[in-house]
Amino acid sequence: MKRLLTILMMLLFLVACGNGEAFSEDANIANVNESTTNLEEENEELKRKKLEKENEELRKELEEQEEEGNEESDKDIKSKSSKESNSVSKNLSDDTKIDENRTALYFDINSSEVKSQLLETTTGNADGTFVQDAITPGMSQTDVEEKYGSYDFTLYASGASPAFYGNLAVVYDHHIPFGPGDDGSDNTIDPDYNYVESVYYYAGVSKSELYEALGEPEHYDGGAKTHNGLPYYNYEGKGEDGRYYSTGATTIGTSNGQVIGIIKRDLLKNNPNAEDTENKEISTDDFVIYEGLINEYLYRLTAYYNYTLNDDKDDIFYYLKEGTPAYDKILSNKSSGHYKDHTTYEVTLNDITDGDDGTVVLTASRVYSHASSNGKRVSTVDYTMNKETFAIIDYKQISDTSY
Image 1 (tube, rainbow, N blue to C red):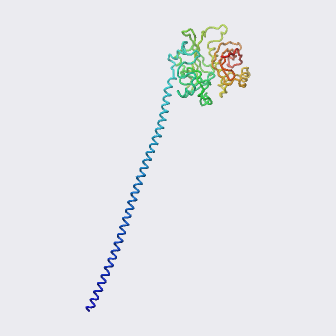
Image 2: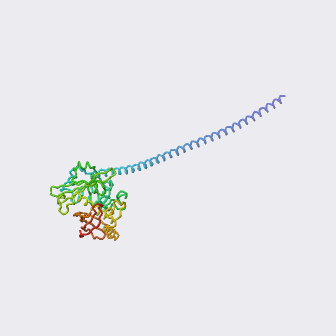
Image 3: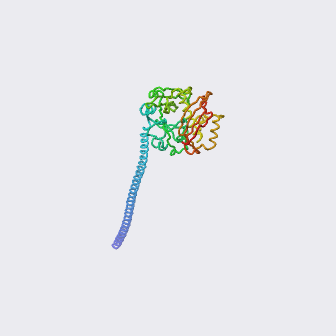
Protein backbone atom coordinates (compact mmCIF):
# COMPACT_ATOMS: atom_id res chain seq x y z
CA MET A 1 0.00 0.00 0.00
CA LYS A 2 2.72 2.41 0.96
CA ARG A 3 4.49 1.41 -2.16
CA LEU A 4 1.40 2.18 -4.22
CA LEU A 5 1.05 5.57 -2.63
CA THR A 6 4.66 6.27 -3.29
CA ILE A 7 4.25 5.37 -6.96
CA LEU A 8 1.16 7.54 -7.21
CA MET A 9 2.98 10.47 -5.67
CA MET A 10 5.87 10.04 -8.06
CA LEU A 11 3.50 9.93 -10.98
CA LEU A 12 1.79 13.10 -9.77
CA PHE A 13 5.18 14.79 -9.40
CA LEU A 14 6.20 13.82 -12.91
CA VAL A 15 2.94 15.08 -14.31
CA ALA A 16 3.38 18.28 -12.42
CA CYS A 17 6.88 18.74 -13.78
CA GLY A 18 5.70 17.99 -17.29
CA ASN A 19 2.97 20.58 -17.04
CA GLY A 20 5.47 23.17 -15.75
CA GLU A 21 7.70 22.61 -18.73
CA ALA A 22 4.74 22.97 -21.04
CA PHE A 23 3.66 26.06 -19.24
CA SER A 24 7.19 27.43 -19.48
CA GLU A 25 7.42 26.54 -23.15
CA ASP A 26 4.06 28.18 -23.89
CA ALA A 27 5.17 31.26 -21.99
CA ASN A 28 8.34 31.44 -23.99
CA ILE A 29 6.37 31.17 -27.21
CA ALA A 30 4.01 33.83 -26.00
CA ASN A 31 6.93 36.05 -25.09
CA VAL A 32 8.47 35.55 -28.54
CA ASN A 33 5.16 36.27 -30.20
CA GLU A 34 4.74 39.37 -28.09
CA SER A 35 8.25 40.59 -28.94
CA THR A 36 7.62 39.96 -32.63
CA THR A 37 4.39 41.88 -32.46
CA ASN A 38 6.12 44.71 -30.65
CA LEU A 39 8.86 44.81 -33.29
CA GLU A 40 6.32 44.81 -36.07
CA GLU A 41 4.44 47.61 -34.38
CA GLU A 42 7.65 49.53 -33.87
CA ASN A 43 8.57 49.00 -37.53
CA GLU A 44 5.13 50.15 -38.61
CA GLU A 45 5.47 53.19 -36.37
CA LEU A 46 8.87 53.95 -37.83
CA LYS A 47 7.52 53.56 -41.36
CA ARG A 48 4.56 55.77 -40.52
CA LYS A 49 6.79 58.43 -39.00
CA LYS A 50 9.20 58.22 -41.94
CA LEU A 51 6.30 58.47 -44.38
CA GLU A 52 4.88 61.40 -42.44
CA LYS A 53 8.28 63.06 -42.49
CA GLU A 54 8.64 62.47 -46.22
CA ASN A 55 5.13 63.74 -46.80
CA GLU A 56 5.86 66.82 -44.70
CA GLU A 57 9.08 67.47 -46.59
CA LEU A 58 7.26 66.98 -49.90
CA ARG A 59 4.46 69.28 -48.78
CA LYS A 60 6.95 71.96 -47.78
CA GLU A 61 8.79 71.56 -51.07
CA LEU A 62 5.54 71.89 -52.98
CA GLU A 63 4.58 74.94 -50.93
CA GLU A 64 7.97 76.51 -51.61
CA GLN A 65 7.62 75.80 -55.34
CA GLU A 66 4.11 77.22 -55.32
CA GLU A 67 5.31 80.32 -53.51
CA GLU A 68 8.16 80.73 -56.01
CA GLY A 69 5.69 80.21 -58.84
CA ASN A 70 3.34 82.79 -57.36
CA GLU A 71 6.22 85.19 -56.95
CA GLU A 72 7.24 84.67 -60.58
CA SER A 73 3.61 85.00 -61.66
CA ASP A 74 3.26 88.14 -59.58
CA LYS A 75 6.44 89.45 -61.17
CA ASP A 76 5.12 88.61 -64.65
CA ILE A 77 1.77 90.20 -63.87
CA LYS A 78 3.45 93.25 -62.39
CA SER A 79 5.81 93.45 -65.37
CA LYS A 80 2.95 93.09 -67.84
CA SER A 81 0.84 95.50 -65.86
CA SER A 82 3.75 97.91 -65.73
CA LYS A 83 4.28 97.66 -69.49
CA GLU A 84 0.57 98.13 -70.15
CA SER A 85 0.49 101.00 -67.70
CA ASN A 86 3.50 102.57 -69.37
CA SER A 87 1.88 102.10 -72.78
CA VAL A 88 -1.39 103.65 -71.59
CA SER A 89 0.56 106.44 -69.92
CA LYS A 90 2.49 107.06 -73.13
CA ASN A 91 -0.69 107.11 -75.20
CA LEU A 92 -2.33 109.44 -72.70
CA SER A 93 0.79 111.56 -72.72
CA ASP A 94 0.79 111.67 -76.54
CA ASP A 95 -2.93 112.52 -76.59
CA THR A 96 -2.38 115.20 -73.98
CA LYS A 97 0.52 116.61 -76.00
CA ILE A 98 -1.61 116.68 -79.16
CA ASP A 99 -4.44 118.39 -77.27
CA GLU A 100 -1.99 120.97 -76.01
CA ASN A 101 -0.58 121.48 -79.50
CA ARG A 102 -4.04 121.89 -81.02
CA THR A 103 -4.64 125.06 -79.03
CA ALA A 104 -2.30 126.74 -81.55
CA LEU A 105 -4.83 126.01 -84.34
CA TYR A 106 -7.61 128.22 -83.01
CA PHE A 107 -7.91 131.89 -83.96
CA ASP A 108 -10.85 133.94 -82.70
CA ILE A 109 -12.56 135.85 -85.49
CA ASN A 110 -13.05 138.74 -83.05
CA SER A 111 -9.32 139.07 -82.41
CA SER A 112 -7.24 141.87 -83.93
CA GLU A 113 -4.88 139.22 -85.31
CA VAL A 114 -7.65 137.83 -87.51
CA LYS A 115 -9.44 141.07 -88.34
CA SER A 116 -6.25 142.79 -89.49
CA GLN A 117 -5.62 140.03 -92.03
CA LEU A 118 -9.17 140.08 -93.34
CA LEU A 119 -10.22 143.73 -93.32
CA GLU A 120 -6.95 145.65 -93.64
CA THR A 121 -4.18 145.90 -96.23
CA THR A 122 -0.93 146.21 -94.27
CA THR A 123 -0.79 142.77 -92.62
CA GLY A 124 -1.12 139.20 -93.85
CA ASN A 125 -0.24 137.68 -97.20
CA ALA A 126 -1.11 139.32 -100.51
CA ASP A 127 -2.34 136.01 -101.93
CA GLY A 128 -5.08 135.71 -99.31
CA THR A 129 -3.47 132.95 -97.27
CA PHE A 130 -3.54 133.25 -93.50
CA VAL A 131 -0.33 134.09 -91.63
CA GLN A 132 0.37 131.90 -88.58
CA ASP A 133 3.16 129.67 -87.25
CA ALA A 134 1.29 126.42 -86.51
CA ILE A 135 0.97 124.85 -89.97
CA THR A 136 3.21 126.29 -92.65
CA PRO A 137 3.97 125.52 -96.32
CA GLY A 138 6.48 122.72 -96.77
CA MET A 139 5.27 120.59 -93.84
CA SER A 140 4.15 117.10 -94.84
CA GLN A 141 0.72 115.81 -93.86
CA THR A 142 2.52 113.32 -91.62
CA ASP A 143 4.35 116.17 -89.87
CA VAL A 144 1.10 118.06 -89.37
CA GLU A 145 -0.91 115.13 -88.02
CA GLU A 146 1.81 113.76 -85.76
CA LYS A 147 1.82 117.13 -84.05
CA TYR A 148 -1.87 118.07 -84.18
CA GLY A 149 -3.77 114.84 -84.84
CA SER A 150 -6.00 113.97 -87.80
CA TYR A 151 -7.93 116.65 -89.66
CA ASP A 152 -11.40 117.51 -88.35
CA PHE A 153 -13.05 117.12 -91.75
CA THR A 154 -12.42 117.77 -95.44
CA LEU A 155 -14.60 119.35 -98.06
CA TYR A 156 -14.28 119.68 -101.83
CA ALA A 157 -14.26 123.38 -102.79
CA SER A 158 -12.75 125.56 -105.51
CA GLY A 159 -10.95 122.71 -107.21
CA ALA A 160 -9.36 121.26 -104.10
CA SER A 161 -10.23 119.44 -100.89
CA PRO A 162 -8.78 121.39 -97.98
CA ALA A 163 -8.19 119.53 -94.73
CA PHE A 164 -9.60 121.50 -91.80
CA TYR A 165 -7.65 121.68 -88.53
CA GLY A 166 -9.19 124.04 -85.97
CA ASN A 167 -9.50 127.42 -87.73
CA LEU A 168 -7.10 126.51 -90.52
CA ALA A 169 -8.04 125.18 -93.96
CA VAL A 170 -4.96 123.44 -95.32
CA VAL A 171 -4.51 122.77 -99.03
CA TYR A 172 -1.86 120.11 -99.70
CA ASP A 173 0.05 119.98 -102.96
CA HIS A 174 -2.02 117.00 -104.13
CA HIS A 175 -5.04 119.27 -103.58
CA ILE A 176 -6.55 116.51 -101.50
CA PRO A 177 -5.46 115.02 -98.15
CA PHE A 178 -4.59 111.42 -97.39
CA GLY A 179 -7.52 109.77 -95.64
CA PRO A 180 -10.06 106.92 -95.78
CA GLY A 181 -11.20 107.96 -99.25
CA ASP A 182 -14.89 108.34 -98.44
CA ASP A 183 -14.86 111.93 -97.19
CA GLY A 184 -13.19 113.94 -99.95
CA SER A 185 -9.80 112.41 -99.15
CA ASP A 186 -7.63 109.93 -101.06
CA ASN A 187 -6.32 106.69 -99.51
CA THR A 188 -3.69 106.17 -102.23
CA ILE A 189 -1.63 109.26 -101.38
CA ASP A 190 1.55 108.93 -99.32
CA PRO A 191 1.11 111.48 -96.49
CA ASP A 192 4.90 111.65 -96.09
CA TYR A 193 5.04 113.34 -99.49
CA ASN A 194 1.83 115.36 -99.39
CA TYR A 195 3.11 118.81 -98.53
CA VAL A 196 1.29 121.90 -97.30
CA GLU A 197 0.84 124.29 -100.23
CA SER A 198 -1.33 127.01 -98.68
CA VAL A 199 -3.28 127.74 -95.49
CA TYR A 200 -6.49 129.81 -95.30
CA TYR A 201 -8.60 131.10 -92.45
CA TYR A 202 -11.65 128.99 -91.62
CA ALA A 203 -14.26 130.76 -89.50
CA GLY A 204 -16.68 127.97 -88.56
CA VAL A 205 -19.14 130.50 -87.08
CA SER A 206 -22.75 131.41 -87.76
CA LYS A 207 -23.93 134.35 -89.90
CA SER A 208 -24.79 136.37 -86.80
CA GLU A 209 -21.33 135.74 -85.34
CA LEU A 210 -19.77 136.84 -88.65
CA TYR A 211 -21.77 140.08 -88.58
CA GLU A 212 -20.88 140.65 -84.94
CA ALA A 213 -17.16 140.26 -85.68
CA LEU A 214 -16.76 141.91 -89.10
CA GLY A 215 -19.98 143.90 -89.46
CA GLU A 216 -22.44 143.70 -92.32
CA PRO A 217 -20.86 143.04 -95.71
CA GLU A 218 -20.91 145.51 -98.58
CA HIS A 219 -22.32 142.82 -100.83
CA TYR A 220 -24.38 139.72 -100.17
CA ASP A 221 -25.48 136.81 -102.37
CA GLY A 222 -28.10 134.49 -100.94
CA GLY A 223 -26.86 131.59 -103.08
CA ALA A 224 -28.30 132.38 -106.50
CA LYS A 225 -24.84 132.72 -108.04
CA THR A 226 -22.77 130.40 -105.84
CA HIS A 227 -21.89 126.88 -106.90
CA ASN A 228 -23.19 125.22 -103.73
CA GLY A 229 -26.31 127.42 -103.54
CA LEU A 230 -25.30 128.82 -100.14
CA PRO A 231 -24.80 132.47 -99.12
CA TYR A 232 -21.69 134.46 -99.97
CA TYR A 233 -20.53 137.63 -98.17
CA ASN A 234 -18.20 140.25 -99.58
CA TYR A 235 -16.41 142.97 -97.59
CA GLU A 236 -14.60 145.83 -99.31
CA GLY A 237 -12.56 148.78 -98.14
CA LYS A 238 -9.47 150.91 -98.47
CA GLY A 239 -6.39 150.43 -96.32
CA GLU A 240 -3.97 152.90 -94.78
CA ASP A 241 -1.43 152.25 -97.55
CA GLY A 242 -3.88 153.28 -100.28
CA ARG A 243 -4.61 149.77 -101.47
CA TYR A 244 -8.04 148.20 -101.47
CA TYR A 245 -9.22 144.88 -100.15
CA SER A 246 -12.01 142.59 -101.24
CA THR A 247 -12.72 139.85 -98.73
CA GLY A 248 -15.05 136.99 -99.54
CA ALA A 249 -16.66 134.71 -96.95
CA THR A 250 -18.19 131.46 -98.14
CA THR A 251 -20.86 129.31 -96.51
CA ILE A 252 -20.47 125.54 -96.25
CA GLY A 253 -22.65 122.72 -95.03
CA THR A 254 -21.28 120.56 -92.23
CA SER A 255 -22.63 117.84 -89.96
CA ASN A 256 -23.48 120.65 -87.53
CA GLY A 257 -25.37 122.67 -90.14
CA GLN A 258 -24.39 125.68 -92.23
CA VAL A 259 -21.43 127.73 -91.04
CA ILE A 260 -19.16 130.41 -92.46
CA GLY A 261 -16.34 128.59 -94.26
CA ILE A 262 -13.10 129.93 -95.70
CA ILE A 263 -12.62 133.71 -95.62
CA LYS A 264 -10.13 134.96 -98.18
CA ARG A 265 -8.89 138.51 -98.76
CA ASP A 266 -7.69 139.88 -102.10
CA LEU A 267 -5.53 143.02 -102.21
CA LEU A 268 -6.25 145.42 -105.07
CA LYS A 269 -4.39 148.45 -106.33
CA ASN A 270 -7.54 150.07 -107.69
CA ASN A 271 -10.93 150.67 -106.18
CA PRO A 272 -13.08 147.67 -107.15
CA ASN A 273 -16.13 149.94 -107.17
CA ALA A 274 -14.63 152.42 -109.63
CA GLU A 275 -16.76 152.63 -112.72
CA ASP A 276 -15.29 150.91 -115.76
CA THR A 277 -16.56 152.64 -118.88
CA GLU A 278 -15.82 149.56 -120.99
CA ASN A 279 -17.45 147.08 -118.64
CA LYS A 280 -20.23 148.89 -116.86
CA GLU A 281 -22.30 145.72 -116.51
CA ILE A 282 -19.63 143.86 -114.52
CA SER A 283 -20.25 144.73 -110.88
CA THR A 284 -17.95 144.07 -107.97
CA ASP A 285 -20.17 141.21 -106.88
CA ASP A 286 -19.93 139.67 -110.34
CA PHE A 287 -16.16 140.03 -110.40
CA VAL A 288 -15.83 138.19 -107.07
CA ILE A 289 -18.18 135.45 -108.23
CA TYR A 290 -16.43 134.95 -111.57
CA GLU A 291 -13.09 134.97 -109.80
CA GLY A 292 -14.26 132.10 -107.62
CA LEU A 293 -15.68 130.23 -110.61
CA ILE A 294 -12.53 130.41 -112.74
CA ASN A 295 -10.42 129.38 -109.75
CA GLU A 296 -12.65 126.40 -109.10
CA TYR A 297 -12.67 125.37 -112.75
CA LEU A 298 -8.87 125.50 -113.13
CA TYR A 299 -8.22 123.59 -109.91
CA ARG A 300 -10.79 120.97 -110.89
CA LEU A 301 -9.06 120.76 -114.24
CA THR A 302 -5.84 119.91 -112.39
CA ALA A 303 -7.62 117.15 -110.47
CA TYR A 304 -9.17 115.81 -113.68
CA TYR A 305 -5.81 115.55 -115.43
CA ASN A 306 -4.35 113.64 -112.47
CA TYR A 307 -7.27 111.35 -111.68
CA THR A 308 -11.04 111.13 -112.04
CA LEU A 309 -13.13 111.99 -109.00
CA ASN A 310 -16.03 109.69 -108.16
CA ASP A 311 -18.68 112.28 -107.36
CA ASP A 312 -20.19 113.74 -110.54
CA LYS A 313 -21.12 116.93 -108.70
CA ASP A 314 -17.51 117.54 -107.76
CA ASP A 315 -15.73 116.88 -111.04
CA ILE A 316 -14.73 118.94 -114.05
CA PHE A 317 -17.96 118.22 -115.91
CA TYR A 318 -19.85 120.79 -113.90
CA TYR A 319 -18.02 123.29 -116.12
CA LEU A 320 -17.51 121.23 -119.28
CA LYS A 321 -20.56 120.30 -121.34
CA GLU A 322 -20.54 117.71 -124.09
CA GLY A 323 -20.74 119.22 -127.55
CA THR A 324 -18.70 122.36 -126.75
CA PRO A 325 -15.21 123.06 -128.11
CA ALA A 326 -13.79 123.22 -124.58
CA TYR A 327 -15.16 119.74 -123.77
CA ASP A 328 -13.51 118.20 -126.83
CA LYS A 329 -10.17 119.97 -126.22
CA ILE A 330 -9.91 118.93 -122.56
CA LEU A 331 -10.77 115.26 -123.24
CA SER A 332 -8.18 115.21 -126.02
CA ASN A 333 -5.58 116.75 -123.69
CA LYS A 334 -6.12 114.09 -121.07
CA SER A 335 -6.04 111.18 -123.50
CA SER A 336 -2.71 112.43 -124.86
CA GLY A 337 -1.00 111.73 -121.54
CA HIS A 338 1.03 114.96 -121.78
CA TYR A 339 -0.83 116.62 -118.90
CA LYS A 340 -0.19 114.08 -116.14
CA ASP A 341 1.34 115.16 -112.80
CA HIS A 342 -0.50 118.42 -113.26
CA THR A 343 -0.21 121.16 -110.63
CA THR A 344 -1.82 124.60 -110.55
CA TYR A 345 0.06 126.97 -108.24
CA GLU A 346 -1.75 130.27 -108.70
CA VAL A 347 -4.74 131.68 -110.57
CA THR A 348 -5.41 135.38 -111.20
CA LEU A 349 -8.51 136.77 -112.89
CA ASN A 350 -7.26 139.76 -114.86
CA ASP A 351 -10.32 140.97 -116.69
CA ILE A 352 -13.98 140.26 -117.53
CA THR A 353 -15.65 141.20 -120.79
CA ASP A 354 -19.39 140.86 -121.35
CA GLY A 355 -20.02 139.21 -124.70
CA ASP A 356 -23.56 140.62 -125.03
CA ASP A 357 -24.66 137.15 -126.16
CA GLY A 358 -25.21 135.42 -122.84
CA THR A 359 -21.51 134.81 -122.31
CA VAL A 360 -18.58 136.50 -120.59
CA VAL A 361 -14.91 136.24 -121.44
CA LEU A 362 -12.72 135.69 -118.40
CA THR A 363 -9.09 136.59 -118.98
CA ALA A 364 -7.05 134.67 -116.41
CA SER A 365 -3.40 133.92 -115.77
CA ARG A 366 -2.32 130.61 -114.28
CA VAL A 367 1.01 129.35 -112.95
CA TYR A 368 1.21 125.61 -113.61
CA SER A 369 3.40 122.60 -114.32
CA HIS A 370 2.85 119.10 -115.66
CA ALA A 371 4.72 116.07 -116.99
CA SER A 372 5.77 117.71 -120.24
CA SER A 373 6.00 121.40 -119.24
CA ASN A 374 9.70 121.29 -118.29
CA GLY A 375 9.11 123.13 -115.03
CA LYS A 376 6.73 125.92 -114.01
CA ARG A 377 5.07 128.06 -116.66
CA VAL A 378 2.60 130.93 -116.67
CA SER A 379 -0.16 131.12 -119.25
CA THR A 380 -2.81 133.72 -119.96
CA VAL A 381 -6.04 132.42 -121.46
CA ASP A 382 -9.43 133.84 -122.50
CA TYR A 383 -12.19 131.55 -121.22
CA THR A 384 -15.67 131.96 -122.69
CA MET A 385 -18.25 131.16 -120.00
CA ASN A 386 -22.04 130.84 -120.17
CA LYS A 387 -23.49 133.46 -117.80
CA GLU A 388 -26.41 131.24 -116.76
CA THR A 389 -24.85 127.77 -116.42
CA PHE A 390 -21.22 128.85 -115.81
CA ALA A 391 -20.11 126.24 -118.35
CA ILE A 392 -16.78 126.87 -120.10
CA ILE A 393 -17.77 126.89 -123.76
CA ASP A 394 -14.37 127.54 -125.29
CA TYR A 395 -10.94 128.96 -124.50
CA LYS A 396 -8.10 130.60 -126.38
CA GLN A 397 -4.51 130.85 -125.17
CA ILE A 398 -3.03 134.36 -125.37
CA SER A 399 0.45 133.63 -124.06
CA ASP A 400 2.51 130.90 -122.39
CA THR A 401 6.00 131.52 -121.01
CA SER A 402 8.49 130.03 -118.57
CA TYR A 403 7.81 131.13 -115.00
